[in-house]
Amino acid sequence: MACWRTAVVIAAVITGCGTTSTVGTTNGDDASGDFFLPVDAYALTVQDSVLIGHARDVLVDDCMSRLGVETDLASRSAPKADREAENFGHYGNRRRYGITNADIAKAYGYHLVGQATEKLDTRQLSPAVSCMREADATLAGPAGLGEAELVGKISRDSYQSSMTDPSVTQAFTAWSECMKAKGYHHAHPIEVVASFDIDNPVVSPLELATAEADIACKHQTHLIEIWHGIEARHQSAEISKHASQLETIKARHKEVVGRATQVIHK
Image (cartoon, rainbow, N blue to C red; front, top):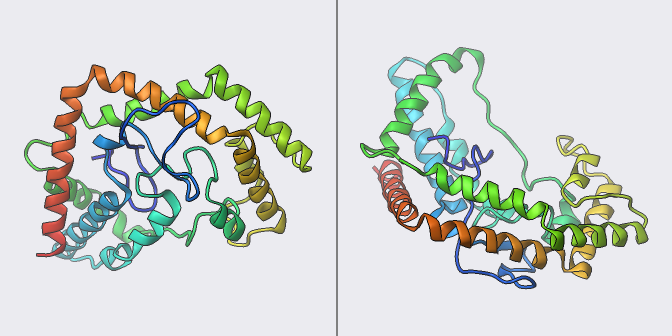
């Protein structure tokens, strides 16, 4: 079940889908930074992933209780949906091209909104492993997820291919020159986040200013439209080669979401 995007950490990127894009356009809300890619049609949405993660926590809590160890993972995972959607968008692509939402950049810089993680203590870790496996098997059902990793592979491969596309690398250069003109020296829009300690809950004024300049330069250079368009082309080409497999994956995802819903509302 490693293919599922969990609520806090996306274990294996399963991003998503839609229709073919052309260079210079985006499918999705450009202002919010929530972008739609062709493979998203076969992927779990962020809301689906949060739902599955919550159901998994319910099952793990039940299993741990049977083993005599009390945990309360479910109560902590229940309220995550809105926060995860704010951080990653409906399709999980909001930070795919770096920071893209101006309001979030202004308030949080490169930090995630409501950044937090839940941890089990040492006493809970050993039984939790078997309980997590049991929960995953319950949610996957007898058929399992089969070739769900194909969705993640298409997503990863398209991203890597797009990074070396001449149109995209030219846009990176234009973005870097724009940033330099504003007084910030960064070669790449993804690498800029490494300049700041996003594990520190305090967001520095420099981080906020850099993030706002980053957004402005992305708009000025049309970086996101170009990058998104190139990546969508790569994905569409791969989807056409695996249409039958992807439809099977889509159907199985729907079944898993249905089982997760039953677990939560039992």
